[in-house]
Length: 413
Image (cartoon, rainbow, N blue to C red; front, side, top):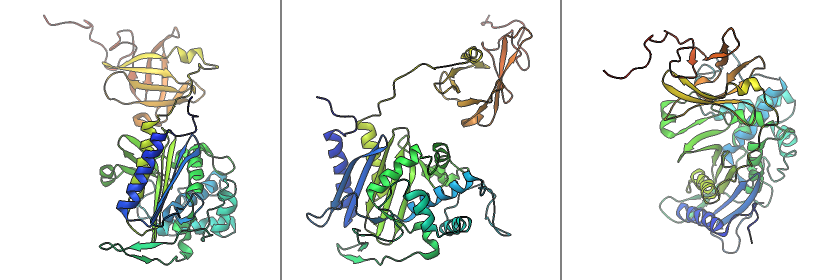
């Protein structure tokens, strides 16, 4: 017998349960609920609570705080994709503390402005626009601006004693777009799947990829912390695994949503206490447990359906000076350039349709790659933003900057 691919193995499920049990116990959370998503669907739900026989399930609402910002960012990018605004637009005489794209600054008031912008351009309240354009198409029926039973109550746990105090559920008013929403582990699991795959009724996969891409240079403190921000999403490198998502914290509640796109695994963790369990770390651990215990099974390799023989001519080894590189044609028709030994600069390139390619990432992002040919049509060298790559190290037949010593390679003596 084999286990269906959509199910987690018993050992994996026990490890997930153990992790949230430790988090609830050591974090002294009245309750904690979690979900794991793999291959675009929820494959595990778990909960721990201080009330015997009354554990919350995936339909119980918790307040999700600043994860609301990711929802608002989706609305803003919908407007951008429609051409209603540009992300470089500015408001007023002194709209920004720093030049656009120079650095990231986390701002609750900034998201209240974005919420007002959505209302102005859509002519309807932020909550109504969110419901119509995001929640309903994605079937997030248990996500709302105000609690809808069943919902967890918010609590403050005394730092030096095992006693609790109820937290009032205040309405954020004009700050709603920054942290108002209530949701469930079930709804957030579906939202996590959307943030990876996209849904053309809401936002394309390409725009969601942009949300997961750093939007500004990382500061030194960001590098130490191992994280930075994209558009409405935090990006961090944890244990060699790139994770994206967002956290939330409001009086009475903690929330975390974490995704490993490479592993196609996501996790949601919700707790009803003002402080206590580190829910973002717990979510990252849930992702790691599944990714390591049950590694993603890759899609079968398949050859290209169609290819350009002129492009195939460029594939193979190239040298920048004495450093060997490999240029490969990828399954999506792009080119991939990477060093053959040790570290080095690597990038992918997409065709421009005219015999040139543009770098998509890394050191060569935005640079143009072109093949320079000799009068007989043979490729002499590759020019990549002034970097010259030849078939052999210091190829005597190629146009090497500065030329090649006439005596060629030699030994000692």
